[in-house]
Length: 189
Ligand SMILES: Cc1cn([C@H]2C[C@H](O)[C@@H](COP(=O)(O)OP(=O)(O)O[C@H]3O[C@@H](C)C(=O)[C@@H](O)[C@H]3O)O2)c(=O)[nH]c1=O
Image (cartoon, rainbow, N blue to C red; front, side, top):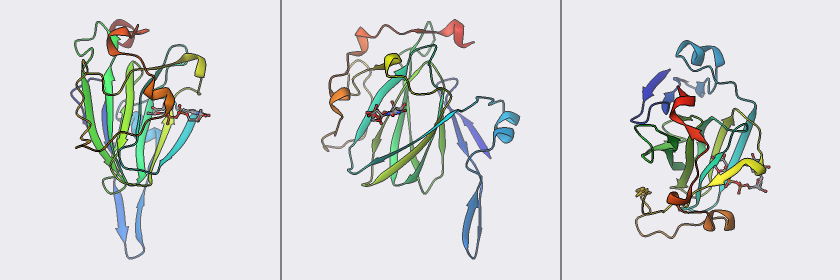
């Protein structure tokens, strides 16, 4: 398993090995023990699967507030996404900074999204399917969102002229400057 840090401490890229033979290939997509050996001991209690029909579908930027804050382990089983995290831990030296990476069926990469981050992605292929594990269950009462294209965040989604497709909820998401983040850097350390 390859474990790579990202410019945002806590955000980690994980690539489990694939073993190919004449039948195809095999991969352990999740192994708690292997992850723990790399210092990742997050307990995941919910699995999600989203399917997006069109290129340019944006889901995000989302978080859940404590006590329902979620860490997520994100991967793609069909197609491609550009997956984005934003540090919203007040007092963090990286507060307001974003990091994005392509996750695809082909590259088998997984992004660990820690608590204290916004998360969102844009699809780069039609019929893209994303699987992710969550460390907390879904709680609409604790949900928060920030507009994905807020100029203050200046995220390069790579849309290249493609119109973003959003849920009504995401289209109505608030501005970055209006976010009252419930996360602090101190708690995260
Ligand atoms: C996220 C979620 C949604 N739902 C329901 C609510 C709604 O009817 C439908 C679609 O929900 P949403 O529009 O919130 O789905 P979506 O926009 O895909 O939301 C997800 O986006 C990505 C980026 C994340 O990081 C996730 O944590 C989650 O926020 O599914 C659940 O039942 N459980 C869940 O865990």
